Amino acid sequence: MTPGQVLIVLVVWGVSVVAGYFMGRWKGRTAAGVWLTAVLSLPGLVILALCPRRPRRPRRPRRGPAETAVTLTPDLLERRLAAINSIQHDWDETAARTESWIWRLAG
Image (cartoon, rainbow, N blue to C red; front, top):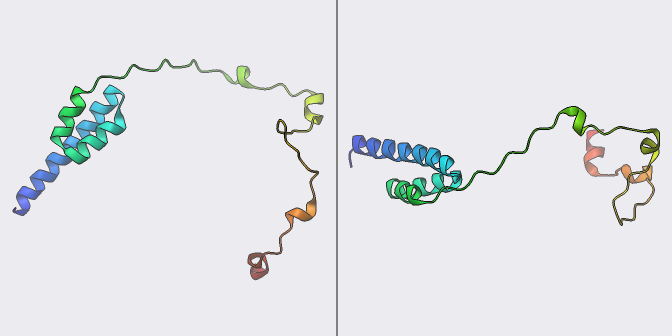
């Protein structure tokens, strides 16, 4: 093949991948659109065209900051956080210190 023919083939392949992306996005199958057209080129685009369209998921209404904010009461601020059914030991400051060679190298 001449370099001109190779360029034409690459341009057609690139256009088919972009078309596969947009068709896949329209059908709700973006990843399938890109992969099918990247691997199979134009036949992949035909296969994607025959795929059924996925139903759209209903969007949840956005909540404002006033609805999502937690009111911090004094008893909530003093309450200790703990995971459910977990045993948490008291914090030991010595456990945070390290004797790693990395820290000794910097100093």
